[in-house]
Length: 245
Ligand code: PTJ
Image 1 (cartoon, protein in one colour):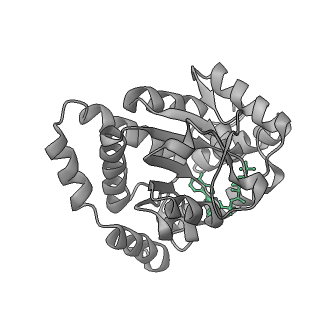
Image 2: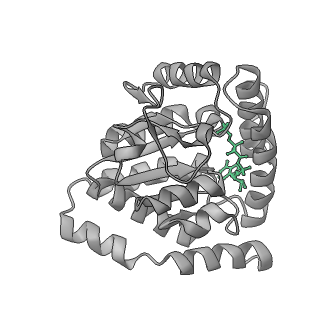
């Protein structure tokens, strides 16, 4: 990260790419994660590499959902761990959520490496390694979750999620918050709160909103949740990408 000059016009994008490359080298990110990153980067370019107003609304609604939840869980995959490990640990602290490693390409080695990486970035308790429960209607490997983690969660944050799993979690009746730069992807399409924004910007902003709402009463939090309209947010993001406004 030292090698990229901060005044480079593509600084953020290069930094992101660099973190993913490092993640692959360190056994955190799957090779497929590089393709995911490339796709995300193209959408971000078209969004103007900024948090559009409806994404900020979604991030505020996400914060309200997480604060209202009985048992919120933040799901971590190889891209998330490479890009925002410390930021995820901070958000978990602020909204009192669990962190759970949940991989599309699951191997014991990657599970352990990612859990350790999160601990190095301030996470105290990392779930996902027990894998003593299954998400119904999903093939064996991809269905593995912790009984006292994602399985029991009422609100789950699933960034950069695969569509099948997003649908299966939705099928379990959970409130699902998805972060994905492609508004047409199946995961944001099935989410209660689709956040179309780069995870690098999204997580710190959800945390800021959560800090600001820390003293809000339940009624105010419910209002924020009710005012958010998922269709409007998805349409606004698509409009920005297609037409630039
Ligand atoms: O670590 P694993 O084994 O769990 O695998 C994770 C990946 C991401 C490889 C796997 O879940 C996958 O293949 O996902 P997809 O189907 O490529 O979906 C990733 C989505 O995330 C795409 O729609 C991208 O546009 C989007 N995306 C990529 N980078 C970012 C992003 N969204 C937000 N912020 C990003 N930085």
